[in-house]
Amino acid sequence: MRTLNCSYNELTSLDLHRFSELRELYCSENKLTVLDISNNDKLERLSCKSNFLTSLIVKNKANLIYLSCRNNQLSSLDISDNLKLEYLDCSENNMAGEGFVMGFDRRGTKSIFNNTKAEDDRW
Image (tube, rainbow, N blue to C red; front, side, top):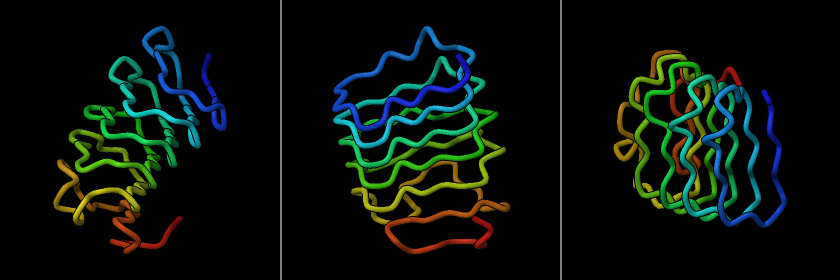
């Protein structure tokens, strides 16, 4: 499976370990509190907005180009070694600005932190 869309289902958990070939994941508008994509190394697009996430594990995702995790309850986010990341929206969380996004490098990344835009406007 390359694409999984399970948005709008009131899910409280999501086990993705069996989906190692996943390229796109859309799981917005659920009731998730934790999302772990550590086994999904081929993932390119992740939209997990409007959940109740307090933990989002997206570190070391070399292929990830799009991440929208807005409107959750994240207090920090580690995006270390996500060198292809082109779009990041982590607004409407419990973060106090981009200092709470670890591993962030602005090179060409359109980023939105708590409703303020950083870098360019390509998206």
